[in-house]
Image (cartoon, rainbow, N blue to C red; front, side):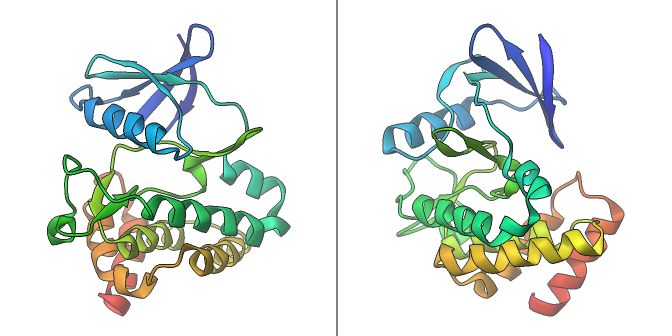
Length: 218
């Protein structure tokens, strides 16, 4: 298998013709729930990779071709508002879907009219294919309020260690995404910052940035 991508927690390998295998590095996390939500989203018409198989530990799915939105943004920073509108549109489309009863709830927000939340929907997890944008990495998917999902995207992008010029580009992207997403970002920030601080992969500098944001909005 050829390694073709590395995330914070998982690696992606090319396997066979037109498929990839996603595997968590710790070896102890099951991909069964992620496979289930991907199949459900495919049936609902949401743009995700098609699942081929899972054995609980590994997830084999369709190989998508095209840059991530993050790669495209680095090449074309003047298109930040345009990419932001795409990102916000993906949020809005996702949050039109009422969560299936088997999707784990995000605290008390999982009750009642809960929607499907990605909780890691940022430019690294959007692939710009010839057939349109496709959303990957659904390991954090939960049922809850859309405002938390949109706020989580904001927390992730606002709390990265980046040069000033890149941060300004991301601010443009976020403003556009938030206008398009149709959810109250500020209302979701307290829950989003708490969730982000629970991520064991954050660097000390990222933790400080999230804590600063939490003090302002938590």
